Length: 190
Image (cartoon, rainbow, N blue to C red; front, side):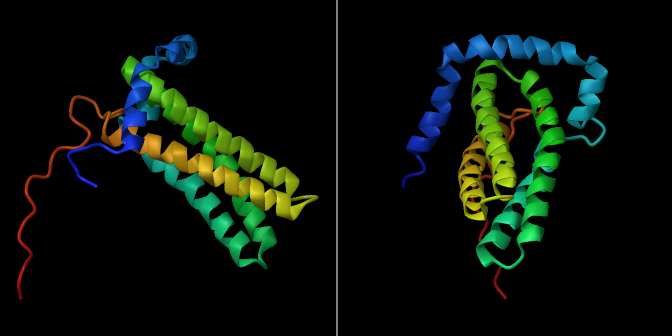
């Protein structure tokens, strides 16, 4: 694949910026999130004290817990541990989502459209993981299948989240998210 022609996936992701019909949901939510807490509190929760956004760092916790649960499911024999990791991931997703909404509220309108789809995919993952946790009590196989579907939704949400951070620069104030690295350096020779 040529680096000069964007992939179809990137084209689709970029097209989300133009989906003005998403504004019917995004605009009221934007106003609500901005009015939900004072600006100073929002900025601190977004990571101002750290010097970079908090949300991307927080995503590692639920993703790691859920991935570990999926691995234990695949290996078998550690059902209780897999279930605990799954439930901990659901709990960890809540503050992660809240901080993500705060970053979303500070983004441009086109990026908010993309962010709304990112949030929808991640919310689908949370609900599917929750359904998995419930189903595992009576039908472990169904619970595992729901976790696999949740992982697919999480992958879509993760791709969009990466695009928002690294291409759109959401949460990166006053600078481009990714600056070109320039030409590659020649490898070191021993």
